[in-house]
Length: 238
Picture 1: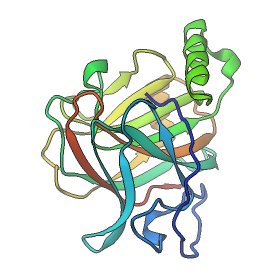
Picture 2: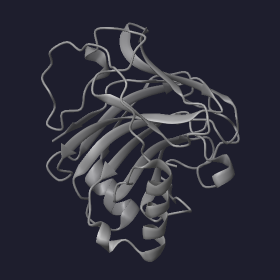
Picture 3: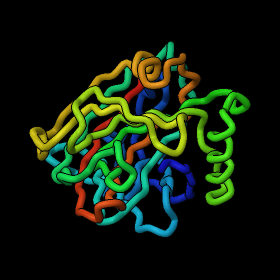
């Protein structure tokens, strides 16, 4: 799960753009293909597993991020510093051509998803429970990176109903919110708009801290199936 290990890789050049209030680097402004978008860095969940391949492509007349892999588990993240109260609206689009039938984030042995958008939140780590503190320390020991105080993932699940909130089994500070389910919209572009502040309150039962990063994650390490997904711009705004 998201033990965020940032690795420095060269990104592609980006055209000048008007940044959103949260300054999320946009895929559509990237000037080159077959490279990482500027401002986005890999994060590795399991160093013993293959990484998901992410690269900029031209697809259906759009410049977008393509993700693919078999048995792979890694993501991309863009560091931001955003007030979840001042910029609560999260907007993005994605398309998944492969939704593994057995994938379900409610079970650790099937916790794969063709597409996820991941938000990391700041908070007082001193308030962590002893169990959560132990898990955070273990992740830091193994990866060298400290987990954010809270992580909210918007996921495409194969089985759970849209709107389901799932708690990650190993820590209470990671929650999933299902925004797409099944295969009805497989192979089609779909756009979303979510109120992050309201979703965080629902998932965690508390107010969100500052948003520290925005990420994307396509993983298939549990079921070892082929996944292909495309991500459009991810925008945080008022």
